[in-house]
Length: 331
Image (cartoon, rainbow, N blue to C red; front, side):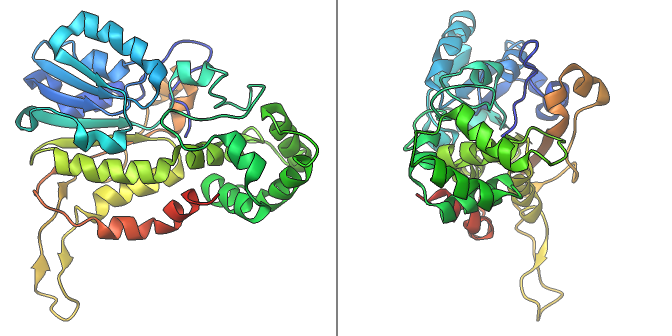
């Protein structure tokens, strides 16, 4: 995932004005911030004393930021150090729940934390674990076979040179443990004659972050659980940053907001049990002014839906992206 930040300055919650206008916190209610980070969205919502925030984050380091919010907002703020795929386990008054928010990017503190190793600018042991992980990037690079590495880089990173990079990794690791700077060097040597629109290592590092944190299955499960948790009339809003995330979010809202014929043989019989109402069919993107202030926001897309039905069968969502969740299981 791409960062939601400007590394030269402070953290900027992306599309903040647009998100606030969508969830309408002026009327009061409870909102779930599924990716608390540095609390940009939560802080804005809590400006209204009628509002309550339930915040989640899998990163244990975020706990200290949450403590400051708890001290300031008292009983209007609760924090759970957990994955957002498990949001259905938290305790809250569902009747007062008005919105569930996801920002799928990384915060300034996470990117700058060299121990997390999220950036190709870091040095030292590969990590990329955001919390509550089974594996690290070092485990993947040190142990995964060339064929599976190729799949990971190609599918999750859309990396053109996946196979060459994978073969070189397997070759190099026989002599030494590959660290962050070594992986960057391997990629640079293979792609040194290519025209650079983005850093050579961007796609491979994206792929590693996805598989280490199981970001695909986490997102799918979180979206399904958010639907089951929020009452009819509530809003689910998601800010995504790369094409894989956006495809999943787009399908989640678009497929389950359309009226479809219950049978191709009965064209006049319509299945109207839609799960969402969409106000904006196209994603909301940052303004030129926001991109100028915070360049990494340029890839952000905000999609949202209003729940219209209590039940929904998400089997097609899981089936649609099974090829991605299967890659997450590779070792």
